[in-house]
Amino acid sequence: MDVDATAPRLSSGLRAIDRAAMPDAMALLLRGFPKQERSFWARGLAEIERLHAHFDQGDAPIGYLMRAGDRDVGVLLTFRSLRRRADGSHYSVVNLSSWYVDPNFRLLAPMMLRSVLAESSSLFIDLLPSHAVAQLNPHFGFKLWNDGMMIVASLPWAAMPTRPGVKIVAFDDNSGPALQPQDRHLLAWHASKGCLAAILCEDDRSQPLLFRMIRRKGMPFAHLIYADSRIAVTRNLAPIMRYLLARGIFMLCIDAIRSDCPLGTLFWRTRKNFWKGEMQRDRIDYAYSELVLLGG
Image (tube, rainbow, N blue to C red; front, top):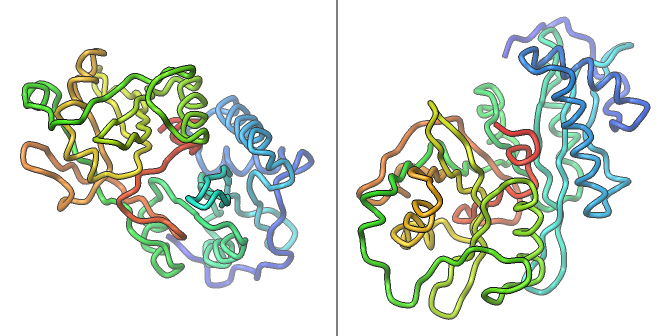
């Protein structure tokens, strides 16, 4: 990250991106991510607004602009959603996305992140940050979620036996195995966005699974974006891969570190993901995130 030591100080801090600030946010996003067209960001900003309305987060900002001197020099989008704890209480999840600071003002980037993290939200996630941001995150209390992907091929795993008491069930909004209402709602919402929703039934417990469909070199992949436990998924790869294979999907990607990968899987180094807040690393939770609403 190039830094201009003569950059002016952060004069008026952050301002929330509201309707009046949308043109300024759009200008920075187009400057920071020139490969994306205006229509991409217009759709993305509208999706974040709809997401916040869905969770009754209308007053929460969809992102922030950073001002230095007399102009805006930084932008950061915030995808906000809610999760329910075992005791019934809720906590916020904030997906930090599309962070850009003009090169001559990147000395101020840590101040921008510190200001955003001062919110009382319980959990922040940062998916696929740039190398510079990945180096910065640990200094702000972020923990490493993964530094690569576990790649699982359907055919060899589909031939393996399933453990007793385990099955994978396609999600049906009106029937199927018992799930908590919030889990059923999560699956239904993501299914409406084109994700593949399923339920892992293991002994007397059921947990939701969500897969994002992607293509690499013409081949369809399923990317696991939600599971209560990565360990539970990897010990039940055989029925999961049969379930995917029956739907024409030959490969599964699971974000991981190398030690997560059982024999018979491959590990591919990718950009790192991070989280900060009340969560265990075993959980995979990219629900309601930029991966669903912006793609990537």
